[in-house]
Length: 159
Image (cartoon, rainbow, N blue to C red; front, side):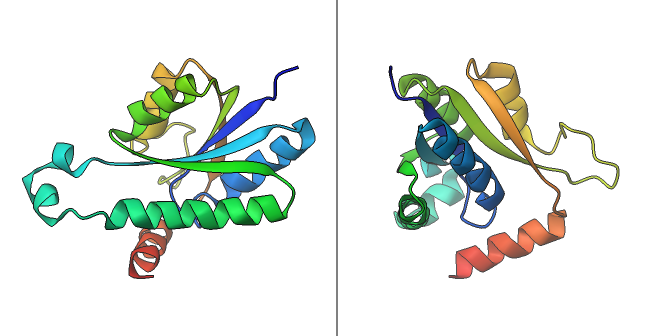
């Protein structure tokens, strides 16, 4: 029997913590491989200003974060690996999941609305994945406010 493969669309240790924890529980229960994937936007595709200020830092930071979480998962007995790729985020997630023959993709979602609707227009990656990903998705709700997310992102950038 071939080992089942699960993947987490990873954004950062804090923002992805709940999604990683749930995926890790499934990986342990199914004796599956868990792959954390972070797709870093390509500065050349984002625009001239981004291209001018681009460095390897976002990719290096993403790799450090992935490596840290993978070490923690391995210490907990999870068969985990991590990947960092550069490109368009949502299409990159789909392409990687297909190439790696992933059985299920875990994706965190966030509600920015006082009366949450499951799919928000402010979550374009989730919308893209729901519309284009041929692999089963497990959507994990993160009910944080936009202010909480912005504060967490600022904190992570400054670390």
